[in-house]
Image 1: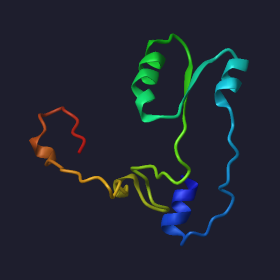
Image 2 (image 1 turned 60 degrees about the vertical axis):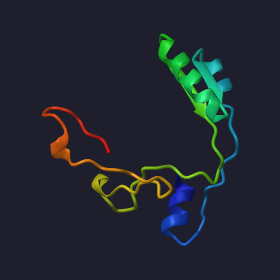
Image 3 (image 1 turned 90 degrees about the vertical axis):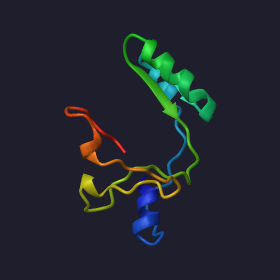
Image 4 (image 1 turned 30 degrees about the vertical axis):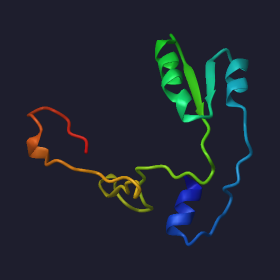
Length: 107
């Protein structure tokens, strides 16, 4: 996400964002914690179900392309009310008044 900020808000001025690959699954195994590495979208549902069914801590190491962006994100100095949504996705928002009383509405 640091790279994303540097790209979007600081004119591609990259500083200290190169991260070496680390095997979090092996680290978890060393501490007796269940873990799994997910490298493809098709593995996500199964990994989440496995983690939900496991009693105790469970780490899922989601591997994504380094150039992939994370959304929603909060720009530097902004509030949570000023989050930036993924520009590739069209969001259809409903008015909050349309939600039943006591219900949480997420766009």
